[in-house]
Image 1: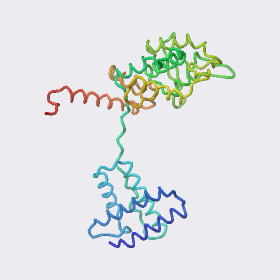
Image 2: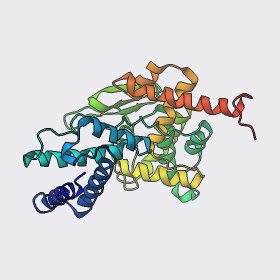
Image 3: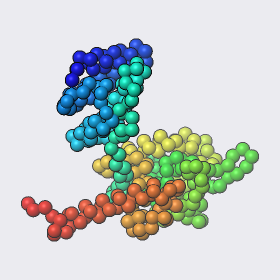
Image 4: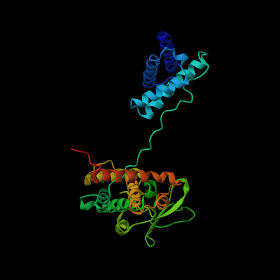
Length: 318
């Protein structure tokens, strides 16, 4: 193989990225590494072609070799993108007629399973006091109600922040979400501007009632917002995230807890108990059942762990 010719082409291409496209030095460094790897893989072919002689079949084989080495699909996709850009540039220079990387795709990435708490950890997280300082009773009550509601109804954090004390509609303002204590439900506006009603459990209702009893003590309170910050304004998504994370640390939950973890926990635990995928879909506000089906995989994963730990034939010999 004429390594010298191919190496010169790569150097010229990288210079063009630097001087004409003004790419960052780190990006160019990644391109250099990826193209050097392509050069090394091409050198293993017999007879050794130049890079300009590579075929789509050979590039596809390279991608398979990277996958076999354990390289993750995201990294393989990045390398293919770097190679594709190089051959596109060669085509612009009339060096090649066909880009051998076109049509070659990285292996599909597996859908990551959502992270959910165990039932015990979820209950411990939402039922415990959020502070140990009695002087912070107002914040403690607000946080307790928010966390109970997140787990009780599987709300998105933006939906939680947007809740009002009651439904309001006038010339100046219209609620996008509100709590209905009498009906034991919460009404929210989710993705696609779609409204849905979700049941609220008894523990969450009691926590919200306790918060509503103490809420009038907050100065300059927003007249509509259900949950408030210390200045009386509607609580922000970011503040909910920070409070939940800090609380989880205080009570000793050994994972990075954010509001979506409670949403995942709600979905997983309801599905484990009921097996009703459609009901979970409606409560989560998923437009497609496909989005909800990931929780069946999570449920099966837990069942498999229980089986491996308990079944005599599944236990590893010590």
